[in-house]
Length: 323
Image 1 (tube, helix red, strand yellow):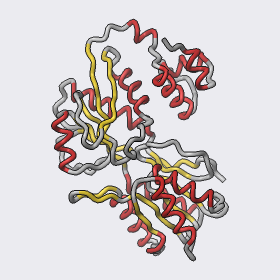
Image 2: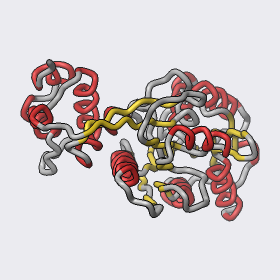
Image 3: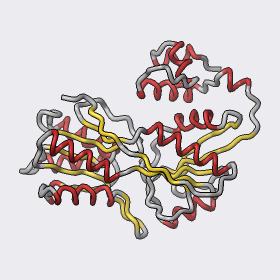
Image 4: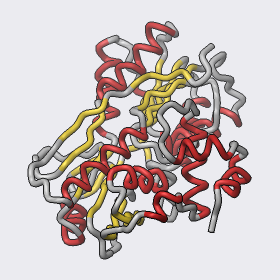
């Protein structure tokens, strides 16, 4: 059985710090990256806390994570270990497991947390699996299901205000994902918000707004095309962290220095990949709060709450390495 010492060897963090983090000691000041590394190592090593071993579990739940529109097929969801520990906080006497649910998968589960936008056909498929679904950053407009929403328009406004008023840029580009299926689209609202705001500022340049697939390779290709064009952006907004990983690779290959040659802002609503450190800004909703609220709402539904709940989370601009 894994011990705190094993987690310490994996992460390089002291046993005392690990113990306090795993016991959710709010007086313990550690970075988000360190906390996430500890939780991930505990999950991977199969660590079970003494408190949890002493508890007599009353029941067992399995929750599916529907994430196929935000994570490439076959890639793991790095946040499942985080979800597991939030479930322990919300329901300490219940053993909760999380599994990834593919587009065509079927599974015996008690509920589903669905990340992103889905077609009616996909929602029907999930409804057949479980009646309890919480949508995170979804295109749903009805009041049937619980929803965790992000203020995307505010996020884009923060990004543009930073580039226009703080950095004083006049040539601004946008790279984002766009996916169409069965009468709905993913990424359209985000792109339209940026275009509308650029038009209002008389800064819209058609050639500097690019959309493609939600993949790192698409981000790399779009960034390469933009960098190679006669009009290079002074500031660039990237609409998702998955695409941003490809954009950062292109900037590195083309020897574009941040922020000397270009200012970069990355929007991270549902955090799905770990991006390298760099001199760029991030507009994000605190991801741990998103996961905690989603788990909390789903467990309430499973336990009998019948009315639908909607919460809206506001993003914040964070300078990773301010210049």
